[in-house]
Image (cartoon, rainbow over all chains, first blue to last red; front, side):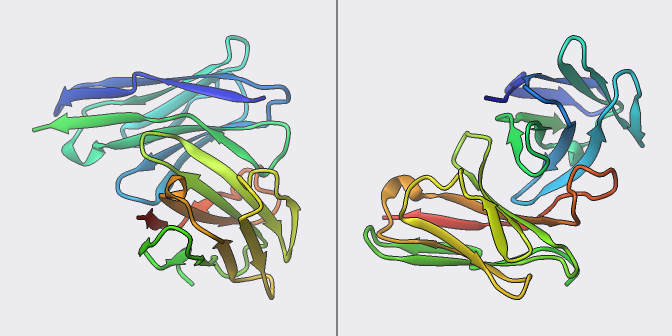
Length: 111
Length: 117
């Protein structure tokens, strides 16, 4: 069974700090790894990673995948209060439609 | 529509009653998914629709849960004889097929918060 473990479960930082969120996984047949941001109810898509070593960037957010060591990280630089949310890591494994989610990392950015 | 629309946004029901949750996916999205998110837990896959057919119902927790999709669009998730452990946020999502093709992002709705008392 596919498995996704995120760490830390929660994190409190001050505005301007840089944070690194971790996602490790176990999978039988890797297809892709995705990151979502969940502020209230609807998770919103951030990145899809399929290849090792290729960094995806969007503004202050970036993510990279290591398929050999089976993990991904999500970096947020110069954090803002609006970055406060739960960040979800999800794995697309044996089937291309079923995502296996981790429990998420609750990030709180204080002014 | 502009996004995935779900209704009701909140529902409180008595134990033993049936509930129906509705999902209106993004126009043109052939793939539709239902997930459940319980407090402190990650999202749990329930069912996937490709068009009107559901090739994978493996995530439905029990036979009290059923879902259908008509016209390749709107889907309804029905929970019969609700139990307190059914309390959760039920999230619907949609995408183009295949969902793992780069660019075919899975978009989520805001969910239906179900409380069984």
